[in-house]
Amino acid sequence: MLGPMDEFPVHQVPQPIAWPGSSDRNFYDRSYFNAHDRTGDIFVITGIGYYPNLGVKDAYLLVRRRGSGKFGGGRGSGKFGGSGDTQTAVHLSDAIDQDRLHQHVLGYRVEVTEPLQQVRIVLDETHGIAADLTWNGLFDVVQEQPHLMRQGNRVTLDAQRFAQLGSWTGHLEIDGEHIAVDPATWIGSRDRSWGIRPIGEAEPAGRPADPPFEGMWWLYVPIAFDEFSIVIIIQEEPNGFRSLNDCTRIWKDGRVEQLGWPRVKIHYRSGTRIPTGATIDATALDGSPVRFDVESKLPVPIHVGGGYGGDVDWLHGMWKGDRFTERLTYDMTDPAIIGRAAFGVIDHVGRAVCTEGNGAPVQGWGLFEHGALGRHDPSGFKDWLTVAP
Image (cartoon, rainbow, N blue to C red; front, side, top):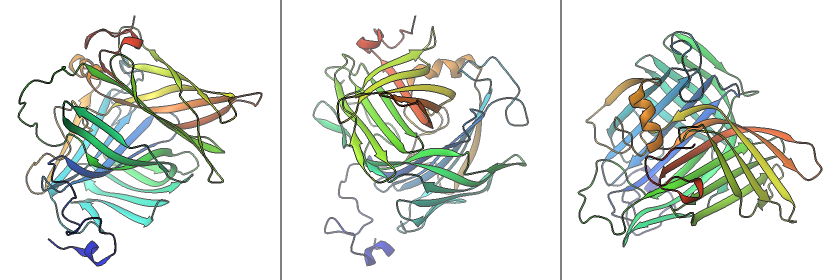
């Protein structure tokens, strides 16, 4: 089980790098990236993951576009807040190997050209979609707070992440259409995470949870402004108890500032749990208020082809057989797809305006990610089916 990384002094436990320190089947190690051109006309989400205790590695690229054209599907009713009608995913999966220095799944690869600063993602043409995208960090990476969740006595999530805001350069190819990716406008966020979280096929249920799982409320907002970036992470239990609170500002000169305990108001579209934006009131080190008014420009449910919780078509770490690829396209006006929105997390092209003290408001762009699953008393959601008035 030895591999190339065993040549380097990076071991943390007395065993080969290929063997995780934990034997939990749900051990994972993966990357997430998103990219958009600030218009709300296109949003790309992609990632790669290694699941050594399941013997699987996989990757995906998810694209949503607004408007007419070969891929956009014409202007429609915009049930998810935009007029784009389709969301398309390419999935790749294969047996894991021991060479973690060259991250790849079939025609998808991630090249780390400058650690913590520059990364290149290449997808050779697969079912009509290809990409060659290079990431450049606009700010230093930030180490997020450890993320821990339990169900009864069992740890269900124990993860470490780092996040970063950056720009993109390169191109996309979608069914013969060439899309240039200009770093002057293309921006996004990324994170690397590893640890334990539910992956792969469902495990046997065992004894029902006591108390039963009633839901969770999640907010993740990494945004880049000219002089600083922010990474906001909040998780709350059904009664509003905040189990995770991380609000960090990263300045161009490398300073890292905590912005306290944000007060958040999510603006939901009436009759749904789909947000149009949020107002986030934070606090600078000197006690002065810092407000972020966040707007959704284009929503992408990442549990519709993205492989995240609740995705009925693709789950990270699931064994699909050797050299598996597929392309799935979803009609985002289909009532069945719309009905899935309340049961997963939605990533949005995010625009934000920061107002601080007597200074002029400044504009930023990045990711606005939110999910309100099940009961959440502060939002007025009494159960899984309650929607905003």
